[in-house]
Length: 163
Ligand code: GDP
Ligand code: MG
View 1 (cartoon, rainbow, N blue to C red):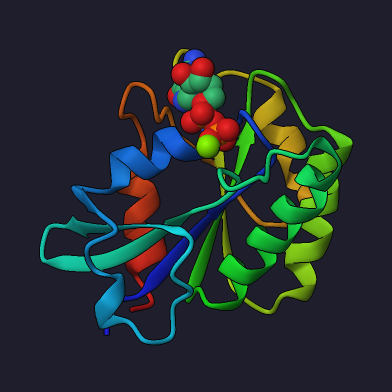
View 2 (cartoon, rainbow, N blue to C red):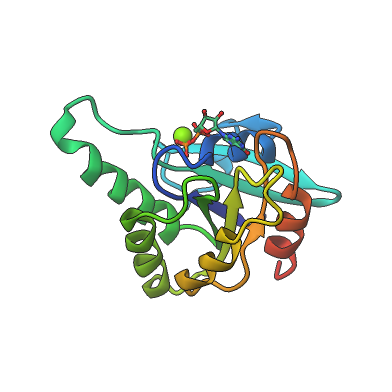
């Protein structure tokens, strides 16, 4: 079976941009994976000869403003539960927020292999914020630029090394 990789993080960090980078086709593959929930955003991806399934999260909020945060959290928990590995995306330009720390705390209890991606890192290789990301307790951050396609291969090499 292909590994299932969940992309999680607070809104606007670049999850969907990363998802688009990681996928070549979307949503057609779910029928073959009886374990996966059907109402999420799946894509099929490949790095050289290694294939994977990637799950985007946070794009399924209901319209009612009261339900948004709760539903996002539920989507994220479900995606993490069915994933083999998790990419936790933070925004290197914005720095860490309380929400990032909340997600990190949750992920530490989830008993999954988590890879920390510091997105929007184009032109930021010297940023002191990269060092601050160690506070999250997720190991070394992988600097990436989803918008510019930088660092994605190296991140995926690390994620796929165990499968
Ligand atoms: P999501 O809410 O986490 O899914 O975030 P999106 O993928 O929708 O991206 C949120 C915003 O960040 C958009 O305006 C993107 O164009 C921008 N963005 C995404 N990746 C990058 C990046 O690598 N660098 C920069 N500078 N902006 C990015
Ligand atoms: Mg999104």
